[in-house]
Amino acid sequence: MTTLVLKFGGTSVGNADAISRAADLVLGRVRAGNGVAVVVSAMSGVTDALTRGIQAAAIGDEQLHRRVAADVLDRHRVAADVLGVENASELNEAAEETMDEYLAVCDSVRVLGEATPRALDRATSRGEPLLARLLAAVLAANGVDAVAIDPTEVIVTDSTYQNATPQLEETRERAARTLRPLIVTGVVPILAGFMGGTRDGVTTTLGRGGSDFSAAILGYALRADEVLICTDVDGVMTADPRLVPTARAIPVLSYGEVGELAYFGAKVLHPRTIRPLVDERIPLRILNTFRPECPGTRIQPEADLSVGAVKAVTDICGLSLVTVEGRGMLGVPGIAARTFGSVARCCANVLMISQASSEQSICFVVPGEAAARVKAELDEEFALELARRAIDQVRVVLDVAVVTALGAGMRGAVGAVGKVLDAVGRRGVDVMALAQGSSEWSVSMAVTASDREAAVRAIHDEVIAR
Ligand code: ASP
Ligand code: MG
Image 1 (cartoon, helix red, strand yellow):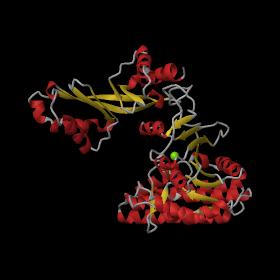
Image 2 (image 1 turned 30 degrees about the vertical axis):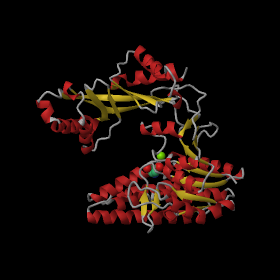
Image 3 (image 1 turned 120 degrees about the vertical axis):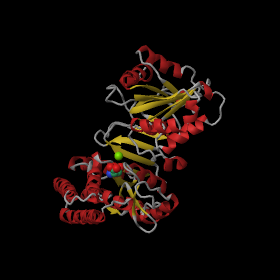
Image 4 (image 1 turned 90 degrees about the horizontal axis):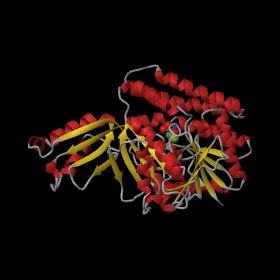
């Protein structure tokens, strides 16, 4: 029996229409004879609202969390009503109980004046279980047996609240015991995504956007044949469609290629999603719930090298370029270590690094908000070298973007980087810094924010779409 894990994101369960489309996708797979398990997110916007509610409670607000709970229940009731599920009143009661838990957590947080990570996890994960029960009811109404399963009993995690790490082997044992018997008899288990539980059953979450990760964990646990992430886009796109209207879904990407993408904020997948799938070589497909006829993007172990070398161009803005420069750095060990040690002390994430063999400068890109504190820390770290003029200055360029061209076919492809730079250059874009990892899967360039669009379009039009 082929086993599939289907995951539906917030917009794919955001209202009655979306939920019935999601149900159709599940029904189609079940009727084709597959074993199916489902993971659902909360309705779009619900996790944000639950988070705002508990954060307000922590600083003494008495009202917001109540309004949030009432709104969530309202959206749930309307959806259940429009969908015409048989057991609507039972579902609404269960939803009320779940929201009562939310209110209880928020009220105690208000009394304590502090929202601990553990309390946050308990409160912000209250949206998903509502959808698991609602979707189960919709499937049942269509003649498919489905049961909502409490994920705290299946997805075992450590107790790093807010960003828990799954205990994969224990999860696999539990899945074999609780989920597999259902699946083999044609029953569809539906799990609330985003959350898991410690060995003692305390609720944890896998980080924002974590229901993708839930699906991958379940895929691993069930040794699934495919994990389907059903969302509101056609797949991983060749470029940001807001910048490049002709961007299209990439049919096939390897785990490695998507890793480069996730790092650069492609926002399609939770960055930890691929990890559990790699060892078992389980493919993952991104599908559009609203356009299921589109093939989407398949993410698999091997790269498809039959297409062009460059498959996608990504961009991140709101960054700063920091340069430590001076003649006294040549041949002096430890400058790079001290530079990045300082950056680490500022808790600033480095998105790109470049140093030429002249060793006259080291430059790197950090989020714009971190630039001032990084510069201050570096000025202090190198105070002596600056005074002696061994280091001339720590220079910061604000309003920088990083544009990255990537594709596994770039490795060993003579001229691939040349084409990228040529395309950018012909549009008059000045490349301030350049980095290519030895994986040769991507090349990143720092440009001024005002050149970002031109750079992305140049690479898309002249290299990818060719
Ligand atoms: N609902 C959660 C969030 O918004 C998890 C998810 O959607 O993946 O972060
Ligand atoms: Mg998501």
